[in-house]
Length: 179
Image 1 (cartoon, helix red, strand yellow):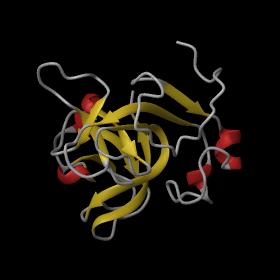
Image 2 (cartoon, rainbow, N blue to C red; image 1 turned 120 degrees about the vertical axis):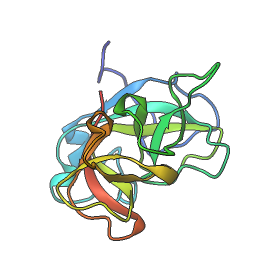
Image 3 (cartoon, one colour; image 1 turned 90 degrees about the horizontal axis):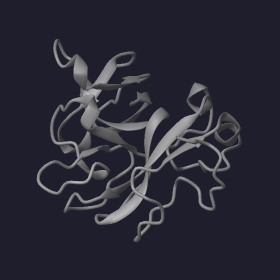
Image 4 (cartoon, rainbow, N blue to C red; image 1 turned 90 degrees about the vertical axis):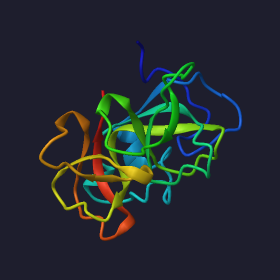
């Protein structure tokens, strides 16, 4: 698959009411774009300085079908399952699930039944469940949030926290690493 050779007309902080790209399309945001914030404006992800602005980011185009409110910044998106489910149709995480089912983490609001870019690899903001500590592996949890890896579920790890979340629903900086 060719990556990084496409001319992108819109930035990764744009949500759509139509399938502007094929779901599952991946987009690499090169380090020069991340440092220049050309496609990751201030306020989208909240990352403007420090190590969180370093390195590349990989995004995937997905459709939100949670059946509720919009995906909010930091919410963990997982694959919908069941008959007729599409691989890149996202719902909020509802429990700790295998990392292979995690699509990524929303970095801006995407309304229900809309499309947008979800962060798959790189630094981003993640919504915690109130139990996240700094410097630990993280897994999906209920309500679209993330939590610390416990004594089991190593197959569910999708990232690493760089700070504590403070309280349930708070954002924390993490490195997301999904295949």
